[in-house]
Length: 229
Ligand code: 6GU
Image (cartoon, rainbow, N blue to C red; front, side, top):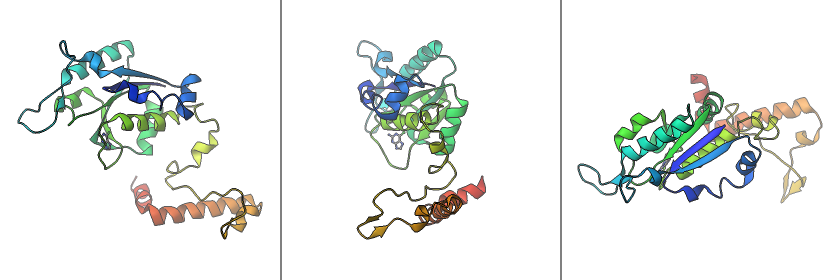
């Protein structure tokens, strides 16, 4: 899977893309990530990308022409990319959206916003607008990395053991069950006996019960969402 990022801060992406799961996935050729500096598509001698808002107000707004020029250039060399802009006004990202991106899109072009936002007409250049949560970040760079990491994990080969994708939180609509390793007792807290029983059917049932209980306690919205869809 091919990821392209359009950003005013290309260097922001250096270390997150060089280590861990994503770093390995790139080295192994499962995914590629190309970072394109938005400044390169800026206007005039100073490569201007932003301007003051019409109607007044504080801050600067990203102009549409540099984005259009960048999208045209990148798409001409990499046809078929799905164009996503990251802003707090976007649709709230969840595992269902992540799955669709991984399974149905040949590659992603992710635009990270900055300043007070984009000129409204930038929205008409994109296929989709996403947010990663109800809080405000300084820019879309971290949100872009969130999308890349969440999608890349679902690309075949990136996560070594595909079984580990199936049981984790959200993939079945439930939070994960509690996990234990050694020691058997830690500060008075003992590992539940069932996990030491060797009875795999009993363990499977206990884990499912725990996952349901935990989801009802902590995230009942996940369960009510499940019946709606
Ligand atoms: Cl995509 N951008 C910014 N600036 N803040 C956010 C966000 C994106 N998603 C949640 N908060």
